[in-house]
Image 1: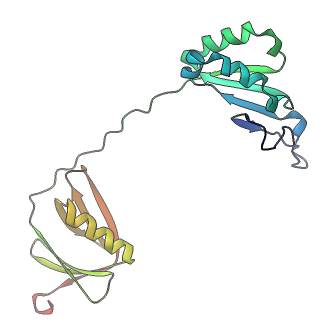
Image 2: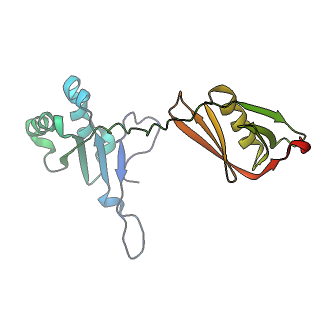
Image 3: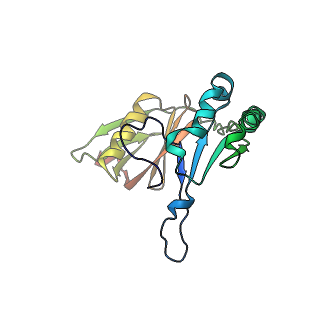
Amino acid sequence: MPAKQDSSLRARPDLVAVPVDKSTWRPLYSNAVAIEVESCNELETHPEHVVHNWLKESVKDFAEVHSWTDEKCFEKLRQLYEKHGEVHGKVKIFSVKIEKPSKIEQPVVQPSANTGLAVSSTADERARVIEVQGKKYRVVFKSIDDAVRFDRFSGISATQVSIKGSSVVIYMRSLGKSITIQAERVDELTSSSS
């Protein structure tokens, strides 16, 4: 192994990259790289820890140590690197641009007026009799879990429930989205079969 693996070793690298021989797929441990990820906070408040990461016992057996940080604080990492000349042959420093994820706007679907919903249980745990817009349907869900999901979502915050083919669509205004639950079968019931 390229680094000691005993319980007395207090510090290990964040990640390890071990190249492989492409013809035999054998690991090339002698070329293994220790990877340290340094946060801007760590560079500002504990630069001595960053230097310790380059010199700690667990990285001595690695061919190189790669130290990565956000491009916003790369200059601080570079200054530490320049200040400690003893690590120049083994340590390489890198920056990465970390973008904040943009907020994804969910499209808001305006439901039609709430026409009411009535739900009855049946002998089959997966089935429900649902009355939507004056029509009754017997819905057999694919699993008991789907039936429970329907009960939970339709009972708590449903603004509108509709039947579309073999799917039950529950619109929830509070979440601004619809939940679609696939059914195994949807049968429209006539008024005499209810």
